[in-house]
Image (tube, rainbow, N blue to C red; front, side, top):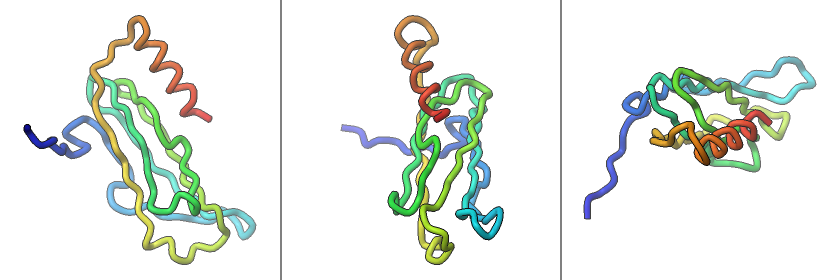
Length: 121
């Protein structure tokens, strides 16, 4: 049995910004620290993604999953649950993504619309 092949995000057509480190900022003294990640599909196929964190009780990631159609992107908001920015440096985020061969006809279209609508909440 063949082992699964791991591709880099650029190989499947997914652009991630920032590429290395997510920087959390506070808008004002009363706000919670937050950061943003931008995902963009540069391929001609759909890309499905899910974002995971090492500490789901510390962070809220919205949307944490979704479908990117060709040449489209999503802005992902990462919010902390606590007002302090201490110990954030040790946390990690994992983006799992794959190209999809689904077409936009029939049931597949319903699936895509359903998941796209949920990712906006």
